[in-house]
Image 1 (tube, one colour):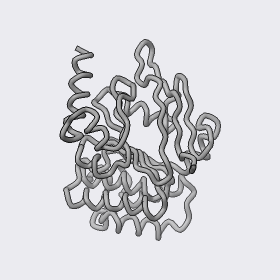
Image 2 (tube, one colour):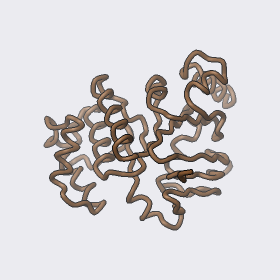
Image 3 (cartoon, helix red, strand yellow):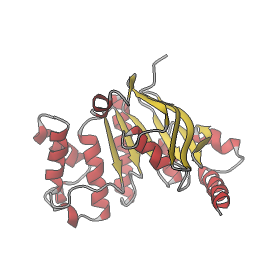
Length: 247
């Protein structure tokens, strides 16, 4: 059996008396797209921050490529990248300058070719010379995706990757992700509030609620388990339950 590229074991994070993530375990296989779902406050952001080494777990472990993140952080993160609708990049640089900075930070070579290729793939030619602070929300989303793709990672963490994008561009981004998975074996952790997108993109899904995993499986398996007609109904069930628990 092929070992997972990512293994999180009994992962817990407490902030004072509040437990944001409570003993979760999951894995991602090579070339797999794993959906991470849950209502606001379920622990998704904290989980991703721990996987990126930005937040230290209270307990538990994270291994990627067979290495412990706590002791091989730099080596692991060279093969990982991240994109989020909420990610900020240097505002005074142009789009192209931002991509060059990312490439240099990762020690990449042949930058002109790499930047040209990703700009073309994400249809960014018309604003590649634009100052970042002047970008529209959709253009900024494409820039953060370009930043993530540029380094040719083995694992990609995507938080709302198609938010703010026009439907045609969102379709092209999803197609690009699927092609990268097929051609290079890219593994992806994917979050979105677009349930149709999650059903389309995810090989498996894990649902978080109040910091715990409450369901895992394919989209259809989860839908069937809870007797719902689609993933959106399942999401609403967990969101309502979590809201009631807080009030």
